[in-house]
Length: 115
Length: 115
Image (cartoon, rainbow over all chains, first blue to last red; front, side):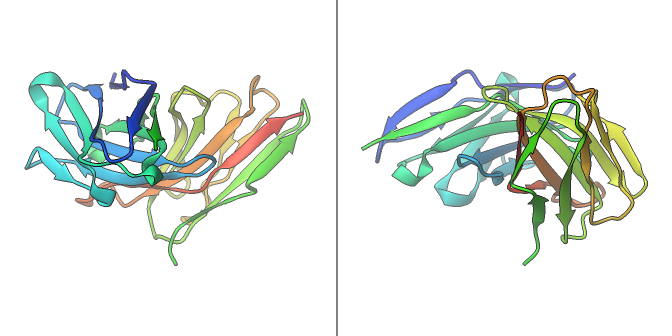
C-alpha cells in the first residue's frame, strides 16, 4: 500500500528566509507526486506535481520541488517566504492513472511565518 | 467560471440523523472523490467514482453512502451508522485517467458538526 510521511507537523520560518518542507513516500512503482496548500477553512490548491521527466519541478507562487527516487522524497522548497505563505501544506501520492483511484495524503505541515 | 461547488459550507446534524452533502462540478471531469479531513490527520478517501453509475469504496467508507446519477454531481450521505461524523469534508474531481495532466481539483469543503 502506498503511504506518505511528512515528518514536520509545524515549521516556523522568518519572512524572507528560505523554506524546505519534507515529504517521503512509499510506492512500489513510479509515483505521481503532488503538493497542495490549504488556507484555514478552505479547500486545497495544487502547487505543483511530478509525473515524469525532469526531477525538479516548478510550481505556482514561487515554489519548486525535487523528486529523488533514491531517497523516496519529494521535498518542497521556496527561496524566500512571504507572510501570505502561512498555511497547511500537504504532500500526496497517486498510483495508477496519476491517482485516478484517489490520492494518499500525508498528515500535513503547518507553516508559520514570523515577521 | 469552472469549478467545484460544495454545499452547504456548514452543516449541523443531530445524533441518529442522516445528512447529505452536495458536490457539483462543471469541469466536465469524469472522476469525483470524497475525502474526510480531521485535525492532524490529513485527508482520507471515503468514496470515489470514475464514471456515472459506478463508484468504489475508499479507505474509510463505513457509515457513508454515495450516488453518481449524473456526471456533474456526486452527493455524499453521512448515515447514522457513522460513529464520529464531525469533520471537514472535501469533494474533488479530476480529468479522465487517460489524460496526461491528471490532477485533482478541490471544492471549498463542508464542515459537519454533530450536536
